[in-house]
Image (cartoon, rainbow, N blue to C red; front, side):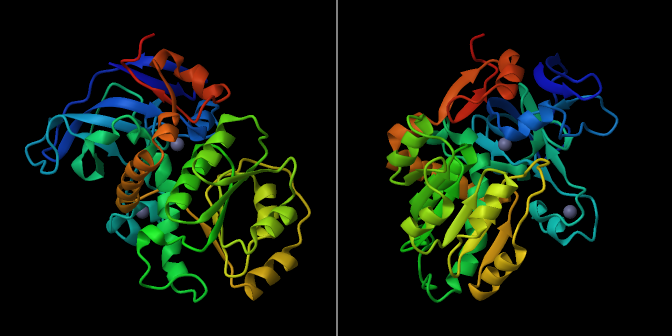
Length: 374
Ligand SMILES: [Zn+2]
Ligand SMILES: [Zn+2]
């Protein structure tokens, strides 16, 4: 069967042939991979800045955003039958008995750093025709979500962040009544999303669905389909080319939540200065090396203390976040059917994967499908 792999030794990204995996343990499922999304992490891996093959191997099969069909089940599998759709999670627990996070199935909070991640760190990924994995790492996909379920994994970033801060929000008098249902947790609050990549746009959709008055701020200027998407979900787009952070803050009023999805440290630092009283700042982007800048940490620290601010970093994601992502994808589909149809930019065969990953992204999410016409 075919797979798309990086070979760090020879600096290659190519389609390789390898043997199809077989079920060897009773709790395993065999999957036929349907869609595999590509993202900035794949770009870093294919630029050899990130990513590690499994120990003793010279290549890493990439791909971590996916949806698959169950085509085989071990004798002890309980939750799945042939033909079911699943989104596999990415991170697998570290082996250390003392890691409380991994031992309680919360490997997204692993203490040791010795976790593996399929398609990223020491475990092969999903950009291949067939995969075998344990049932417990699979998330059930309702059949109506076949076309967009590949977005569940990138959406878990927003879902995990929101579930983390919901707990904080409920304990802040100006924010939420503890009785507020989770679907309305953003009611009366404002949110600012930084960036219009897939993580930013999916974050904006999640925040708007949760009732936040949502702004999206990025350097793009109209006409741009990503800006059109922001308008179509009822959010307000503001370009950093024409409006500065202080002017944006004046327009928005108290900024209750900033959701950073750019991965640029200077930009994030500027945004932190306009976070409102009792505000939460969520960092999701992983910056590469950037130039040193002058900053005013005393001003930032003063704000954080005197305004009760929270700074939260978050990396995806556990089973609850996957379940929430799949629920929200269904909500998006009902609420904005025309928008949802534009989220998948196209499905391409694996032979085009390297060019698509390393080239400039077009559309929102580009997908590799092994049955796509060449
Ligand atoms: Zn990704
Ligand atoms: Zn661990």
